[in-house]
Length: 228
Image 1: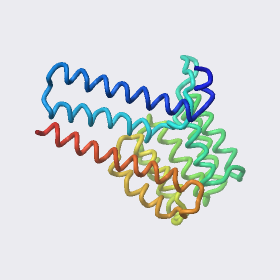
Image 2: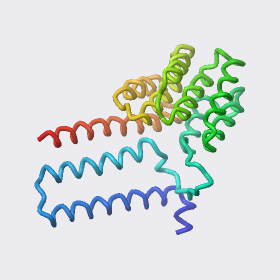
Image 3: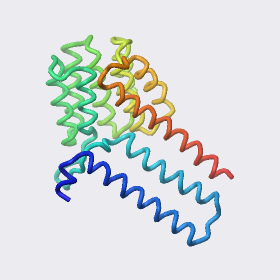
């Protein structure tokens, strides 16, 4: 088991295998109880929604890490931090603000994380990356909701850098975490349209956009099945 934990690909595979086994078991139970076909469809849609949501909001390509009562669950996976560095740069003038804010969010000190990012935009008011980080910090502090202050920060970032994919992508991510998939969809489409196809992060944005579209389609399918 230790080998799987050290290998991201194997850890990801084990996660999807486990999810597949759960799905097979669920359908076997539905068959055993002789449930109607529309119930089968509803159950399948629910399982697919769970799988898509897992891949959309998490980092399924990374291994699991143990969670203890002393360590709050992070609101930002390593994969998303890497994507942020690809989009905005790894070693830049705003990097210390991002590193401090992200560490504070992981520790649960979200109010201080907002304060750090407010200090950043005060020092560099024309920096779109910092305004994006401020929007993300507000979202974390507001328990995953995109408050008016968060929207203002993200919109300011997009106004400062209208041709940069970073602000609309992270604005969309905040909306995904809030559960407003319909509002996130045009933002991620816009982010992908702004991304050169040769960029190393193009496939990462495209993958999340495809998952979001799949999530919305599954939700629509589930709603139609429930209404029958």
